[in-house]
Length: 195
Ligand SMILES: CC(C)(COP(=O)(O)OP(=O)(O)OC[C@H]1O[C@@H](n2cnc3c(N)ncnc32)[C@H](O)[C@@H]1OP(=O)(O)O)[C@@H](O)C(=O)NCCC(=O)NCCS
Image (tube, rainbow, N blue to C red):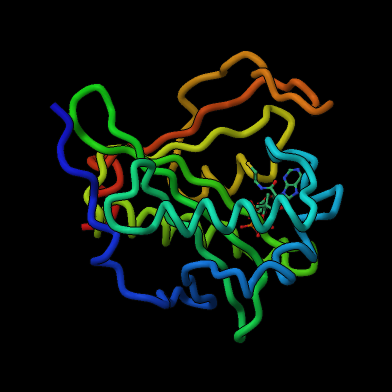
């Protein structure tokens, strides 16, 4: 039996981190997100590749719907703000596991002008606070293409560990087929470092 989905309505926005703020994405954020999500270097190691306006709009809509009460596929889609400007985005996809618990897959992107400052690490750390501290999920995981060392570093700094290597998926649309590393951290592992 699957437990009821976590109640995303308990979360209070915006959520400040030491240098950033996270808040739910809106259609008003499409231009700011498109500015970096459309760049080849930002799409290089994402499963979707560089995104056009229609793709960003569809993604924002999907994330917004996922945040509504009773959504069949619960999701959080957040923008990352620094000094009031959108510098990146992140998402949390919730799904039931085999034991009736809930787990999450996280994703993130930081615009090129703001990379290398530790922002992605700060974002992932806050997503873990949300997922474990507030939503009481059992596990958080992330998939990263094997050559994407910077993102693996982000996950390791945030406390996830590499648990598997999975063969290249079936990304269509001319995307490169690359093996994934699966990174994960359990609620117990996270709690051991935060209490
Ligand atoms: C990957 C990404 C999220 C990193 O964001 P960021 O804010 O620069 O990350 P941080 O500053 O928190 O940490 C980056 C780490 O990677 C390291 N790094 C950066 N480029 C690297 C490279 N080419 N090889 C090895 N390590 C690299 C940095 O040195 C840093 O580690 P350190 O603190 O030990 O020095 C960002 O580049 C991005 O958004 N890329 C495009 C979208 C994307 O790929 N998203 C993730 C998909 S899985």
